[in-house]
View 1 (cartoon, rainbow, N blue to C red):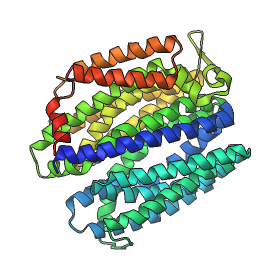
View 2: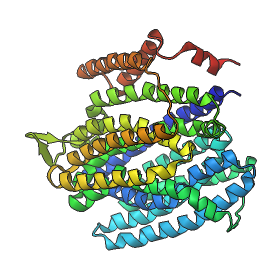
View 3: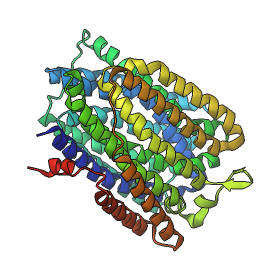
View 4: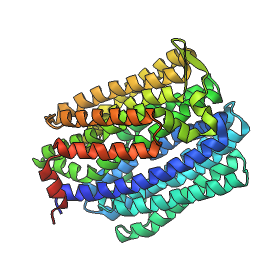
Length: 485
């Protein structure tokens, strides 16, 4: 199977699965947000941000180390068993530490209990990502996507049941634990087709794993700081209402930021092989990645910006509480979750391309060169948040995220090009941009006349797709190469 067809199959499997998964997650979030209200969403956001901070230490770059090792090492069973054992040890230590540390913070009691439950839930997520790495390497993302959907459905159904019996905050979070555990167990069953399960303790190999993972781990830790520490800083410097307003918009950001990694992750094993072997097809592969990311970034940014108000209203419900709640004004105008979303969506668009160059750097094995820049990004973001949050609260945090993302993409580009100067053609970008602008004005008009949000999204997506083919923004030879048998 050709590079294009392998990546296309895995990307298609992810796109379909992620679309279903995102729909299920949005339904779950909408149910939770409508039940919790602004302050409850603030608690919810704080719990997940706190656990995510510790979980990134448990991840420590081991999934991408696994992927790279499986791509270049012939003894795949040895690689998997050692990394699985190494990760289990770190995950147990880190997640236990998270639950212990939360008791030193002045959070409400139900937030502390919630951290304990979600810590356990994310232990399964951490271990599960090791199994997903095997599916990525085997080009069988359809399996991991399917099990992910089953887990998300379980979370949704259990959440709805717990809401129906009016359960408390911490109890409702147990639905996430059940769904994550189910997802892990299903993947554990299916992964045996591609790898021999077990654990090895090759202490001569472990230092190699650690040395490969360390640069990525440091990058991921400081990436978390500059991209997600704002929620924790808001929880400590402001109140749960401010976190709730910001968290409503940020939840959609968390969903959308998985889009580039979905595609780039599917392409990663082959791109790494092209880089290692200095294959000329690397240039073509990178151009296709760039074009695809631009193709999906434009409508996401434009559509979300003009539909921000109905999107927030759908997520929060409660008679418009989430679209009107405000604790800060900018230039005399109350700032709401809608304001945050309209700022953050541009950060999402920029992050698509910082992801592109970051993945290329990892494929090159040059992740060490991103350690100090990433520390710099984190320091920049934290200092900026310390300046703007006291005065502008969640609006300041939103702008801080956007400005940091611009710095990240610029630095990532220069680091990647230093080691592998790839020229990117913008021949199709102008056509894509025009199609996106037309679609955005179309969505804006139909929103102004009261068209249902989902009808508007469907019509806008259909229009954008038609314009892309009309303008020939996607080369027909690429389409033919994907569908050709």
